[in-house]
Length: 147
Length: 147
Length: 112
Length: 112
Ligand SMILES: Nc1ncnc2c1ncn2[C@@H]1O[C@H](COP(=O)(O)OP(=O)(O)O)[C@@H](O)[C@H]1O
Ligand SMILES: Nc1ncnc2c1ncn2[C@@H]1O[C@H](COP(=O)(O)OP(=O)(O)O)[C@@H](O)[C@H]1O
Image (cartoon, rainbow over all chains, first blue to last red; front, side):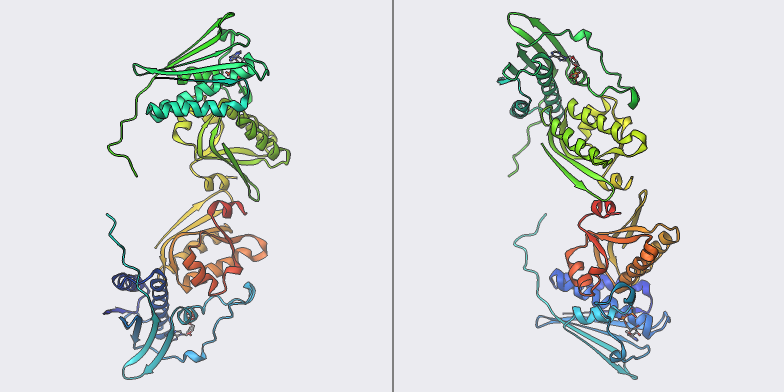
């Protein structure tokens, strides 16, 4: 099953993105913990596209696709903004005391921790493509529906 | 229906008295507000017998009877302690500010307010008898019991 | 009856459970005396699970209210009074206006 | 998302409802800025009804935590963190030890 959504690069569209992911997870009867991981990862990824790839442009296209097959969800997010090198980004020091703690820089880290794999590809012709995967389990179906 | 209980004049017995009244009200399916009024009035009355009629004696007998007939509960409480004149007792000033407020003296007042009638009779041969009445309503019976 | 107390930094919460009858009112008195003896004079009485309170319980409240307010040192405040106890005890005896009364324990604790 | 704030005498409660996504995190930032600008530096964030919080929401929390603690003037304390958010956001990012965390809002308010 594949679900797709296209939005422009505006923060206010992230509510629609979140609704889209939540609905996908609901339709696939994903467990609460899988749903949560997807919600967070997609939200962080799209926010980064808006902030860092489109650098404030509000009309950049973002295409999001969620697919479930073989017990694995694959999310791809494609944009046509600036490319970047994820290896150049320092990961946060999660053991630092408050004074030394960076205030941002947790988005990429959360995506990597909550998804099984996170891969960025940059291609001048087809845009930037982020692919995130996570093995998921379905909720046991309820015996009967509550009224 | 009549329920009776005899206890000695010890404060710790008031928990049994309260259970007795609660159980009577439950068996008669009395409404919450009637149950509440009976609980308060009987508790206050018995506490007064222990404090003021038996003056600290712990082996004085107290006999309590609850009866429901014609939609009215009649409670009688009999003791063999000191008699007293309820008319001589000043009623509390319920509008007084905190500085002027007496700390005690609310028991008799609550009994009179929560019951329809409160009557004391003193008889050297048969002891002191307090009779309190209140018109009550039964709880509407539930259509079916919950499991 | 059961009395649970919880000491917060500046405030103590006294939770009343079940029936504060003329017998168990003595325990309530004890709890209040311990608090005021330790100069813990900001007290919230949470009545959420109170079934009824006798006039002796009220006496403990009034005594402690006076004690905590003396020289403006503290206060005894009430929250979550069940409607029946509000109408048939506090309103009936004219006690309601003497206390600061709150809908919930957060507001009561936060009022100090 | 919905943010409800409640001003108590010495403490402000900020209740987060729904999803603090990267979009709505800006509103959360606004709420905190208003409080700190008014020198209301004792803040309780109640997460009882929070569905998730994005890294931008976390940033608002950390910024405000630092701001309130500067010169020991105040603090931002958390309560009712849902288990999922506790494990998969706060523990994962190492934020848990930075905050004072409480089981319920009464304890959080009373901790000041
Ligand atoms: N899609 C993207 N395009 C360009 N740069 C990005 C992208 N995602 C992340 N980055 C870079 O990686 C850094 C870390 O990202 P992240 O961990 O999400 O934290 P934050 O966005 O709060 O800075 C960003 O500051 C940015 O420089
Ligand atoms: N059963 C009784 N026997 C003797 N005296 C009583 C009795 N009941 C009440 N009294 C007198 O009436 C007064 C008021 O009683 P009450 O309103 O219950 O308040 P309290 O018991 O707190 O003083 C008592 O202080 C006592 O002097």
